[in-house]
Length: 498
Image (cartoon, rainbow, N blue to C red; front, side, top):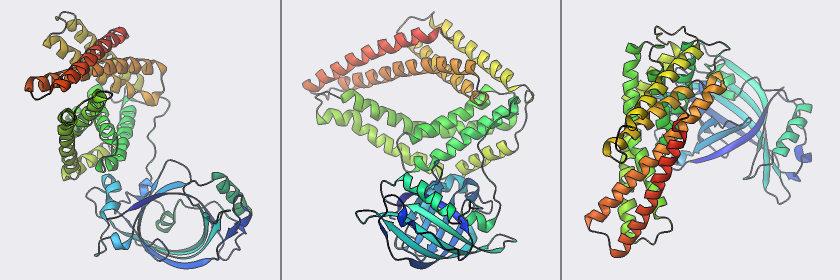
């Protein structure tokens, strides 16, 4: 189905019904206006019984009337006054009136298996004036609305009100016009809106998702729950992006899984370990599924980097990148399948339940700083132990390489555990996190070169490469050998920082 998305930048004002609107042709860049048009817009708003969408400042509606009749999904952008609106016209929507798939994809991580039901019915008499610029193109749209709303929730009530809406139009909207319009409309009698949206006003109070934060002297449990909420939010935010295979989305969602797991492993006695073990295993499985797609993404990027500036044949390019593309496509399909499963939605529900009612462990009441210090000390000790073992192994041996990989994994665990202290805002924790990240990055680069050189050797060993391609492969291998040495040098330079 065809769908389009725009970013709305608008102002809203409450006004008295019948209040005369000001002449907005005095706005900067505006030289004229169309004749006002009046429409009747009838909309049904959909949400879950728990109001999962409204609680996240999202609205989904089916609306008739006006120039953009169809299904609309509005979501926050992070910018005050701006919202993303996804639109699907009736010609592209299911004939049976079901919610279009395009509307569900961005919110399925919030809705999960819960049914979308009508929660409000609104009828709006809208009078629209389009303001025009010097070249006759639309600059902004001013709407005078008379709204009647009926909440369809149990005990819902009927309301009527009037409001003004001013929305910037065009590919390059001028924020100065918005500021000037705000002043004019306020002077003309516009008041701050009593609700963020028509739906919020229609249904009244809704459960609101707030940004996780800790107080001045949090306990270990308070810090851990805050961190879990932060990474849960990240997981849910990247879910719709993974579903459309957006750049870097798989990586970020996988990181959210790993960070959640690092909370359980880094602070095992703060929560009841017996009650979080299953959650930890489910996150591990999800991270592994996402990891297959992520690994193929990384390898595709590496292949592109390896072939850059090289005169490689089409056959060699296909050998390096073609097969990996097919692997990536299969891995993404597997990830999507997992993310549409009841098991995945149960995992998200279980995380929410944990945040709402965390099972305390024996160290739940420790001061957060003490719990973080213990976790850092434990992880540092494990890294130093691994480094001591590394020093006893022959450099370049299989065991030596595996030990470097172990140090990298432990550095990552330390980094994630230390990042968990970020809500505390302590400088000393940031220094440890940086040192762990530097080690992880250097050894990650070393590991990449080892994987690449093994693949190059396999291609050479297959006997399928031509003479020119063999020369190219040799050049690439030489570069990788140098990169490996630099990565190892970088690791040694920062290894002592822990």
